[in-house]
Image (cartoon, rainbow, N blue to C red):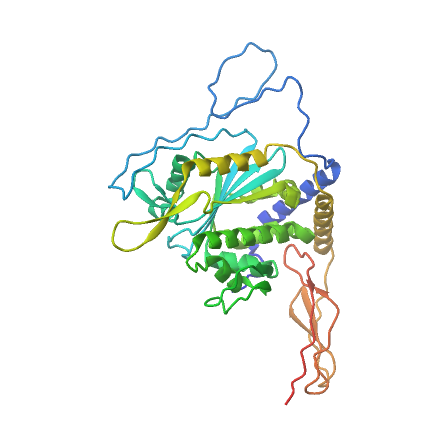
Length: 437
């Protein structure tokens, strides 16, 4: 199923307001210098810790008061565990500018709850414009507070996001601020809406996805979903493929001004996604997303065989899970935090992305302000070029081959429009090879 860009009437007002915010953000991008991402700090700046105790100070200067972040009290197990329950991990000391976003992918369609076999933590330093992605295999065997030792991918189905947050806090010392849960349908829509992905397959897949030999493949939504969900007996390798596709999706989203389509994409998906991320949360972070488009500003980590070990459940089912090596896991999380803690200059690619989104927003405003006269189909002799319009505002031109067996004539790229934000997207038509007897 492919979504269209046309929105219901009751949503266009909100979408237009979002476009205004996006225009304002673009003006801010152009007005601000794109330096290293760290604003200057005065000598009298006071560092605040979100969980530090409030202590009165004798000062006449106005200062912000941080809201303490309440750390959960973990419930005891509700049933016997198959292995010893480890102690709770110490809480990670995070800078106040660091936010934690959690990306989950489930195998079940809404409204059903299933395993979340895609688990990716995003550690984002919003002041320095840096991020780390930590990808975690779903069969990691951890303590689910109030339940027992179980696979991490079952936490959402057993207790929703509250249990997922408590589980991550207990086992890794980290608690997400925002989350998004994606079902198979929305994932496929996103890939198709972005115009497919060019994926480099490192290890061939012979028994699924129609067969994928090693090499670069252009994949649509269905093929990409198969690529990231195929297990093949090696879940860590599957987690690496998921992270690879996640990187490709984000890179394509920030290129060529596609972030200008953010209000339409959000409005198309909001009834299907499960998330506490609002459209305004995303729009206010458009400048941050453009900076994170610099590949040197994002670090990627996967909990692999150095941090995990395989273990067979003692229930005669020969089921294997992954147990964490606590010290190695803690070292990886420390490394991920260190990667986003040091400032660095922006790459020149960020200037390109900023220019592209500025042009895209300008084209959007121009297209909205310009009246369009639809081109309706006309009768023409067979073999001559014909014009047809499927919907007002979406002109298309087709050319019929004059002789059977000859390739279809190639035409120049045309702009396809998506109401109410018609961002031109080039569409190329390639010749069809002639049929040989």
